[in-house]
Amino acid sequence: GKKSNRVIADGSSTVFPITAAAAEEFGKKNPGIQVTVGISGTGGGFKKFCNNETDISNASRFISDEEQKTCAKNQIEFIELPIAYDGIAVVVHKDNNWINELSVADLKKIFQRSDFAVKWKDVNPAWSADEIKLFVPGQDSGTFDYFAEEIVKKKDNFRQKDVQFSEDDNTIVTGVSGNKGAIGFFGIAYYE
Image 1 (tube, rainbow, N blue to C red):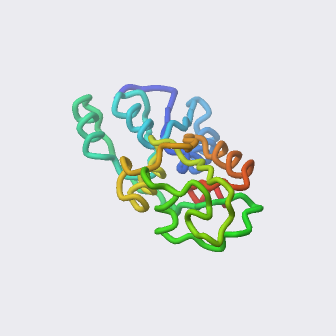
Image 2 (tube, helix red, strand yellow):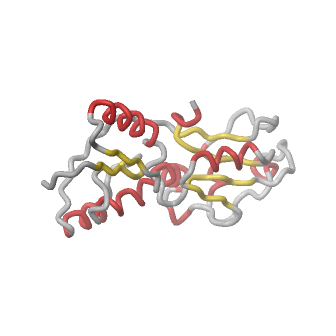
């Protein structure tokens, strides 16, 4: 392949901390090579990778058949290398004192596209009348893909109304911590 003094990685915000740490260590041993790490979500990272814009694609899911076809069409060969398994943290505001646990059925009522819960009492009559505010990963995110698949069975079934989507996990944290009725989710490593 071509020699370069740059390595470009992009993709999942969940994988970002691991890649950033690896890039820092690599930089210490290889000071002549510049490593940049972007966060455009798993899907956004694969788009760039399959268009030969990046060297490494960080992903919180496996590459899709469609993405593999795009890579093949553009003569991009790759090695898929799982490095870790991650969980998803579902979070609410620290002053939310009515929830002790949420079932998958509860989450479905909140996150489904139609007939969704508007207020917390719509999920459980014993809960607050506060409006539910959603702060979630962007739809290019592998974390979003997985959550949508597990909770509402496919991306097309995911709620679109009154949802703040972001590829930046910190935006989700800020949103949830700024609103008592909020709920959000992101990789558990970011929560830790």
